Length: 217
Ligand SMILES: *[C@@H]1O[C@H](CO)[C@@H](O)[C@H](O)[C@H]1NC(C)=O
Ligand SMILES: *[C@@H]1O[C@H](CO)[C@@H](O)[C@H](O)[C@H]1NC(C)=O
Ligand SMILES: *[C@@H]1O[C@H](CO)[C@@H](O)[C@H](O)[C@H]1NC(C)=O
Ligand SMILES: *[C@@H]1O[C@H](CO)[C@@H](O)[C@H](O)[C@H]1NC(C)=O
Ligand SMILES: [Ca+2]
Image (tube, rainbow, N blue to C red; front, side, top):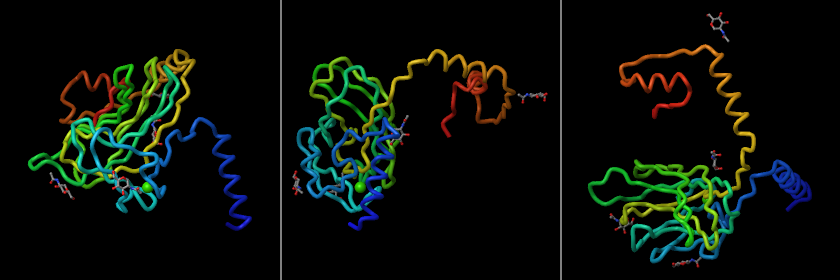
């Protein structure tokens, strides 16, 4: 590496650090490391291999031969009890059980001493397109032995996964103040309601006006 490039790398690294709160907690989160098996594991039977069908970079992980509904890609993690985290990944389904058009995909944290934490659910994940699954969730009080998991509800749905991310999200301490401010702003601003035949329920329109309800487009 040239000195200039090296300097730039340090600069970018420092910049990322100073920006804070975005430290990636997963190992090999982009599936580019030569030895996939060092960071990623299967929950019970399944086979993990590199695929060049990548979301970013050169490779992703191909998950095949899954032995059960809950089996699939996992990585063990050490997290703060009751913490707030963002867990997400990109998935592309390569096949489905014949007759199925879509499948439920979930971003889950499983801890042996607590119930599952759901970070994201994509009920209608379709074939052959990269789909992002995940979001922010609160952790249980006991986070010993937890692992993040990519859960695909069709046993025959082989898939590739890339750009898995787990980061801590700071707690919003003054949430009440922020909520009040938001309510004030909504109350004082003019509202434009566009009524179409598709907005069937008056309740939806009312919630839409309040900025609470967002229609699925
Ligand atoms: C990882 O393990 C799988 C078996 O689960 C094997 O097929 C694959 O070659 C291994 N990959 C590496 C890089 O060792
Ligand atoms: C969670 O992280 C993903 C990946 O970095 C990002 O795209 C997404 O916007 C984040 N979600 C929230 C709610 O912060
Ligand atoms: C999914 O595709 C893989 C290879 O691409 C194949 O081995 C497997 O049998 C297929 N499964 C189904 C249910 O079609
Ligand atoms: C709301 O609409 C009224 C009437 O058109 C206008 O006088 C007022 O300035 C608007 N207020 C805002 C905050 O845009
Ligand atoms: Ca990648």
